[in-house]
Length: 375
Image (tube, rainbow, N blue to C red):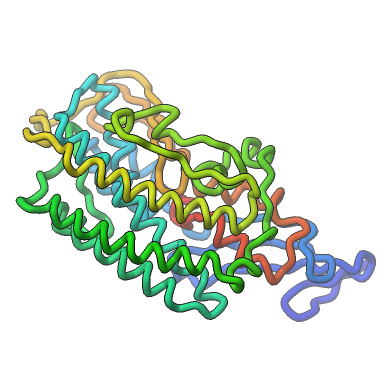
């Protein structure tokens, strides 16, 4: 039977199901995710995420960049996790080269990675309550985030695309007195996190998130969901602890988890993860050793023939790089495993049964960036 267009969807008279096209948005936005939904009344029956509207071609661009230029390119697919993206690339190169970076660089990288986790998570945590009329959480998140961005800018010269990592260490050392300013910044962040915790505990927020978009642990493992979204379903995986790197083995790291698996649990895990990051930064500050932050490199850097896999616990989840070298100045292949792609891939299993009114809540609680999804 021929379908007829009804409003923004398509009505199939034989089944009384509506096929709803949600998205895509205007290309001038930061990115576009399109969902093809089949509805029964106000409930989702099937969901198909349609990606690629912001295809960046990063993996092919890597193949025509030398190893120094990779850092600049790597921090752009997830623009909220720039430092962490750079870190995964240089760790892969250093592993192939058999390179031991200076100890001070290792500790500074650990500290900066946790500051990056804070700037990422604060944006997700502060933005969603705005959708149901709470503006103070967004203001609190921006105050905390701006305090962090200022010290990051002081150390790297950048606020978003910091380009701070180098094969062999860091681009530059931090200025004198920087650690004391970071400590003061942490006091600001703790105060603002109290405001965000109040928003999570409010009746309005709980009504919007409790029991909404429950992600089963079996779905988490089947689709490779990682990060706060996975740990909120009881899948206790964190590469900082389970496959340790940098200075994490020497730090007291606790991993935030929940078991409910709903949107509220995902936001709770994210909020607790931010407090963990504050604690980790505080642990790093008094333990920063003296010494250089980089190794001298030849003018033409060539990685030995071979392959390696390097992954890190990025703010959104497990970020992996598969590097293949043929001994040239550029990688022969550099494939990425991005957390956003796997998280969004679970939507067909997660969304059936969810009300249309709750779609925004579910999508916001999966914590993905479109550039990281389309890579």
